[in-house]
Length: 89
Picture (cartoon, rainbow, N blue to C red):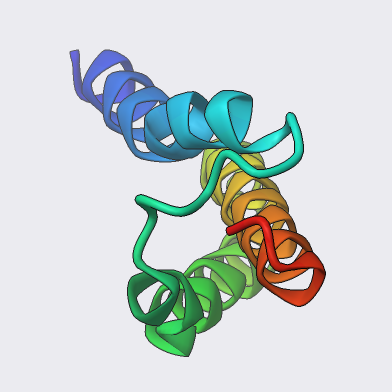
């Protein structure tokens, strides 16, 4: 039961940025995303620290879940910066 709860929590947390990334992938689709929210390094730093913590504990669920979340947040941030630099966001 505890493992199932961890897997569910990891999936929900990790995939929470997937809809934003899907919307942001086409050029010019990030105008309604808050760059300040995306630039909040606390989220990316926190996810990175969870990855490091997961490695140190040998916990594959922590590593995988937070690495996926970090990649999605990074993707959305990259699209938002791209769109603002090109003037379309």
